[in-house]
Image (cartoon, rainbow over all chains, first blue to last red; front, side):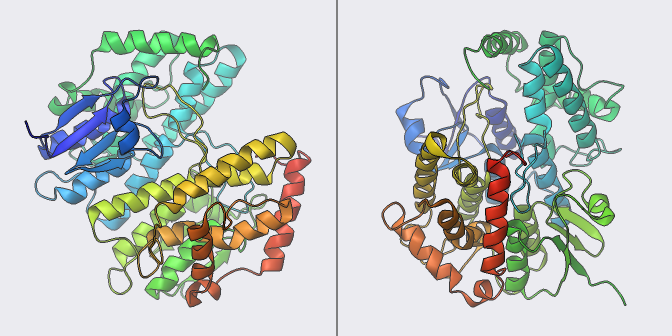
Length: 242
Length: 242
């Protein structure tokens, strides 16, 4: 049997692969999903397709591989130009969407000036920080995480979705928080995105999880819960390092 | 006097602001340069224009501010569509250019799977690592930095420029290494990009520094040398932290 024109190398529990699936589904593109056993047992094919970072997701389109979830989403929108529009049409809106996606994703930012750096903890790193620490360190990180999501909320404002009346690039980029965050919060007995701290974002959590395409493509909650719990214990016991 | 339509908030010694200047110059866009005294004495206007990351560069176009150098470069190419093309036209080439720019820029990458992370040291972080360490730690980082640039060289291959026959997005994104790297190497008595490790990249260093627009827009070498040396001493003595 011939290979499908589009293949996605992912991992069932990866939010980064899920974002790319969402983009493919919005466009109505058929694809084959290749589930990788990461991080300890990657296939030779993955290493061949993405030798530089060796990470999933990797999209293979007509034999040509591409890595990095947000870059893949832009590629999908650029290549299948018919149908659903993912990126904002206006150059300024597009740039702003990219800015917030970067803000949500960045682990850490080097200062963009004269190589004096400081730690600017953004959404994803702060969340993992809270999730993989305890006591005073966790409390400090919790403040930063709450601050980061409060800041992110500004990009939503009074809109239904970050993309406006329908989901777009930034919704795909950060939509996974809507599903994963309550799981993290439950496991670690903390609260980051709530009605007090980021009420608009909290409402958006409910709204995006109610979009049919999103709702029907999520991994099983109980399995994500178990895996997250297990990973947290491995972090806390020092078996794996952040 | 009326404000110029385009203003760039930068800092004379910042390679990140310089990239944006290069894009503006390639397009032939007139702009006003506002030099910020970073990191210790930022203007209120900068903090108002970029409250989220508070970093330079910030481009202000018709009163609307935008941050993050690579995002600004894409915005410039998207907005002034006439004349010089900065981004590759083909969606796959465009995605690849973004991938390599991210690879060169990222400080650190969170694993894109199941939140098991590892440290993937890319060009910029490895370079700063070598520059701000000593002894065994430096030797270890040096290996990683040499590896990172050797990897980056693959994106150049046998082309004149990363953009092909003329400079493009990726050349602008990483061109600053051509000027700064030999300064870092000289100060720290190390060698990262050389004829042995990355000969094609080393040739590209010479080639891009010979492009008129680039050559005529560089900051004074002696001042960058002095500032870099001073910053390094501050890092090594613990006065400022990486």
